[in-house]
Image (cartoon, rainbow, N blue to C red):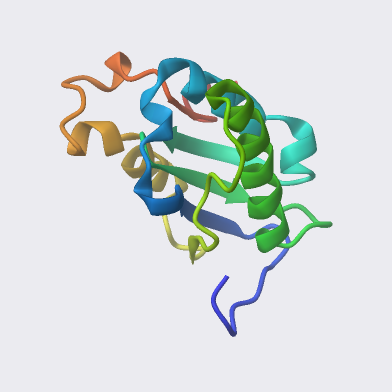
Length: 147
């Protein structure tokens, strides 16, 4: 997080993390599958809730709602570490997978969470990777199957 930012319990954040040197590690289907399994693990998330996400070849967008126990920088560090360990195994490599920093934006009370989630998951469309979002396998949203 940037200097002066505060991590608030219950706050929703749009987080973007990029790979080191923008390496497209997740262009490989098996590496991407491994990454998704890793960052969705309860151990990585702690008490945070993952509302929406999209994994791109060289970065990830997460829409996270913090829980009571862990600040944002800890949640992001744990998720990046979980992905790094598992993806490095699949890639037969060692060393940092992610750039050290991340970008975050706290959503305001008046922000539309569903609209933000739609914006996040539509990244592959805007990048010209697919013509239909359903053709891209690495995204999800809690609003996809409402209860």
